[in-house]
Image (cartoon, rainbow, N blue to C red):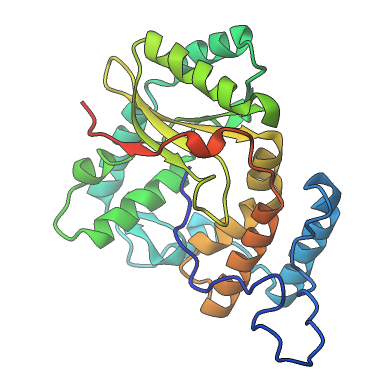
Length: 288
């Protein structure tokens, strides 16, 4: 799964920003600040209301189909995506072939992860298994973006850097989170899989919580595995997914971007950090 980096604008302090001058009454917290006295689940309705308020201010533009984006002089076999993304007929054909082999590990990996779920002593369970294959349109967007950012690169070059065409998520109760993660990792290593990337977003990310990892199979295929608590999974899947999708669009203007980042911070601040999660180190290794 893709997540954006640091927000453009820091969150105002929940005390209201600048320290009050002597004699001033303490400023009240902004209306959308997280409430430290309520649990995440007690604030879900408020998060949804905040999102409705956002959409009322920035209504979602109607999406365009591939046919709507096509131009009269487009050559047969090309591809166009949102935001002016484009693949030539040759690039599009290469992308279709590459997506096939990017998805090749799915059957084997799914079977292994289901077995890990069956036997996991700490209640780790797979979430959203129906979405384990990243969509073709999203993969082509990534390919087009990478080609535009790296002039002279080929489809093969940029596809070699895509590690999340197959992706999975485990969730676990907060009290079992760290031990559940450790058992899942140990079981995958015992099956011959090798982690080459781990980012612990509990440590530093104010807009997204969880652990994102990427693995290589014995045959050289790759897949992404996220590890969440029930709260952080709900936040990712049901609260901030729409904001994340808007942040991906090149047409989202800067004022809305700032509001989206703030909304994601409000939601993420309410998520309880499970015991031991901060001790799980991030790491990066080269693929074999």
